[in-house]
Length: 127
Image (spheres, one colour):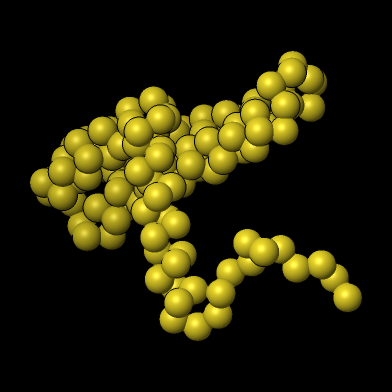
């Protein structure tokens, strides 16, 4: 029989409520302790308002806002990777560096995707 973690999720409706509150705790912690997440969140709020005000289709608004949500999601995953690496050891190690660099590269790609989405939508609308 496989060992079961004491942290394994509950079943039913209680699991859904617990997952929601764990997620809210994660967002609060990210806002409180992750500078990059706060910066991206500010850009998300400003960008979302701009996207909603732009004279583009609803689908284009979704693409613009959705691409920024992807940046936030990837940043949260990157922060989780960094937290786990730091939890295991604060010692410098090539594998720890790789893990953190891979997470950072993922954030960069998400940012480039969002920038490209904005560039395409704005170019098609105004040029």
